[in-house]
Length: 198
Image (cartoon, rainbow, N blue to C red; front, side):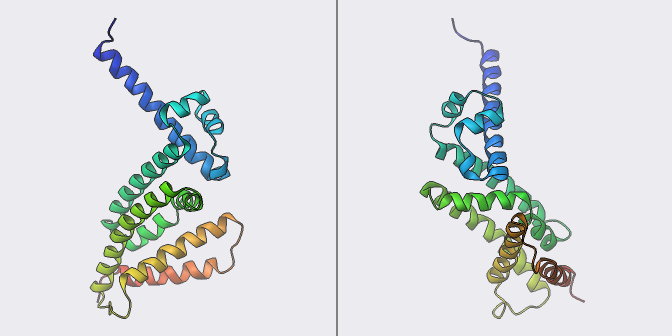
């Protein structure tokens, strides 16, 4: 007996929902407990499904981790596109680099030390993210007549992005030394370069 197209669509929808639930559960476990805690059993329990379903959708844990990374990367790139066209793109990019998405990204960086496939995917994502961020920084600096040879946009972008992520990482560890001062310093410069030249 063959299934109807309606039945196939319905099953596809359920499968899609289960796959999405597994990806979301993995991201949650990684954020709350670290990547080492994201076992198939733990993920299945969080998603409310049987452990065998994890391997039905993702033959290996690397496949699952890559799916989580790719979905997160695409969502973050979409948020970045919104940020760079906002009224205050530099402020929006700073906030973007200071969010939980950045925390999950750092968890993947730790995971990449042990998994080559993750390392390659992170490198590809970082290139795309960095290119767009550098362009936004370059546009702001150019509008203010900054010497781009003395202050290369790629370097300035790396400094701000790295500082945002370090503050986020340290805060998660309970370290706050210098954070208020660093954030005040960054805000002064974001304010300065966000505003149109007078």
